[in-house]
Image 1 (spheres, rainbow, N blue to C red):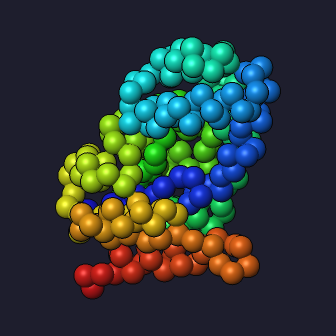
Image 2: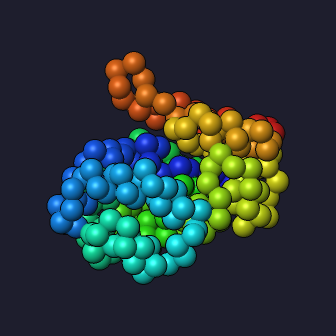
Length: 210
């Protein structure tokens, strides 16, 4: 069995934190500076991404304690979705990969993200079929070696039978260091995403033993 792992932000969906932060500040009733300085610079989002806050309820309890902003999951979803734009060519590539093997998300994100996928990523949830691996569930972030070994273990496959598509070069190099295949997803000179290269990489992986 071949497994095709896709990153989410800046791979399947374009993502702009500068659209998310103002919306979070507006909904939470605190300043953007306070949110950025206390939550993100304070390391809490990173902690959430490795599963230290194991439920959405715990995430928002700690978020309120740290920032003073009391958010619901629905409000968090509004702000997160405001920062995300589907990349049509990437989503089409995911669908194509699903005809060749098993596809899965592999994303550095907290539990509220996983709980919100039907709202945030309606274009891909049916294709993923609950293969929605996020770092908070796996207990490690890319490019740590253990996130890849744990993701592979979920499907019972060897590194050589899996490929990662990711916009982060360090994440790509981390996968390759373990023996996985990987494709660094970038933009073209005209600032469009290299979705043609993504499709070529999918087929090169699928055809590697032929």
